[in-house]
Image (tube, rainbow over the protein chains, first blue to last red):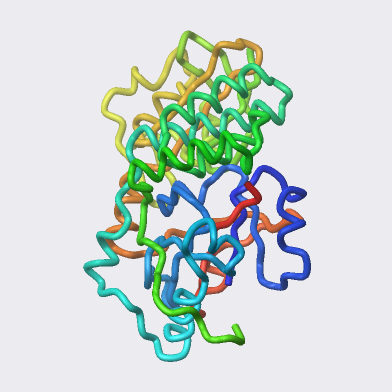
Length: 193
Length: 138
């Protein structure tokens, strides 16, 4: 397990990883969301021993903490991970895997660049420049939560508050667009993860 | 002269002369800024060279335009020269690299710091199954 925090600072991440022993990396520039075309979190990618993508970007939760909100439990994915680790079985075929992740649109790439300038300017204390670029990033990628939701705390908004829920609902009404596989559903996992 | 923040493979700063949307730097500073070197055969990194058809788009009075260099490498770029003292340039990966990785199912190599700042690359864990999980505090 390699966890990558798409976050602005290590201090933002530490409360979430207290006591966790697996590697936790910090991705301030959202590099991972560019190289794997990731547009929301939590997202998982399975990578095999040889460095091949065994199962491309998918929605998957580590626990049932958000199950009531998202309707997605952690169990089916965790069961599938166990089968992959123990038996080498992947639940989708190669053709499905190849076509599972649409490439980023040009505007979604530009949004990442504006986002990076925004966060760099914010660190430099150039607040006007920061705001201009963060707002432009959000305009360019309205379906990408790694842009618009990640920008909320940087623009002084609450990413768990009412403005988030309103935007989230609008995103759901557009069909919850996501670059990758939907979350696995099915029976809940057995106990003893 | 201005100190430009360049956000490409890394975040660096480089001294530059701003001319409209052009960000003109010493060719010797190009490798540190975007990881490529200007040579007679083109823009080069390791054994790979990208030919540059029209060098006049790239070179102005012996200085290289960072924005044109990124474009020659097919890397999308955003420039902010509104503040002439502190401009910003952000350079994306070549889109084709990502498309190929998604199509060929080859996990792209990346290097990121852990929470203490120590860099780690995906290939460190080669030979093992890896479950990569992107998460966030927001």
